[in-house]
Length: 353
Image (cartoon, rainbow, N blue to C red; front, side):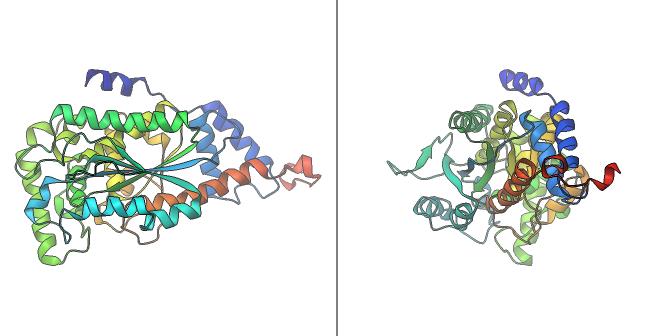
């Protein structure tokens, strides 16, 4: 754990010189200044992350971490626990929403079993990094041991290193795990100091009765784990999931390697929030792909003054919102890198007259 804290402390801010150069370049392109709006801001941010005036985002990867949750024993989901393992097979077969949307974004999908309560055996395409067969029930105690948390974070960092070695220049987070919106709601409540009813949503589509139960379970989780909640790392251990910890680790690893990383929806944002609470500078490295329909997501965006790339009323997870955002991000970088300047095109720049 001390090694992890040391790595956190070593991450510094974005490259301000690269960002300044990128903004100057944007203002020289053949368009009215600021007319590409958020696309210009994304290009400047990515220049700051990478330290490059002309970054590339042509090699994309969505890393989908999958794990089970002990809190499902409390009856908080419309789907049974075994759906987690079934969806892993669907991802690998190419039949899920993330497969379809990733193909449009021209992004690889890497499926990581970090904590599914199932023995997959030898199955082609699955990255097997199981640190536990799911978490324990957060309504009665901590989700993970310190060892499990450390191992899950290490898996995420490893996947970032693997992406770096493969030349990936745009990463995105994905998640799957029945019960993970309950764990994420508990994390949002703890990190944002919010009442559970303000940040707990319907997840898989539960009715009012289930939602009320889910809110009570989050309240129980906060109460029984209160002693851990003054430390952001121990908060993740107590309330999170192994897939959430894995995403947190990948965020850290991406920042170390200066790889832009797109954060998907509610669950991925819980991991991002954990990372930000551990080191606020990490916020600068993150691109939030979309605003989820989950209740707590808007609370996060308001409290941390975040801007999503998209808002499409989605709440699926899997990396689906991030995949769509990758398309917009590539457009931003292509415009930044490929547009002519006023000087090179022989076009009069009215701003300089």
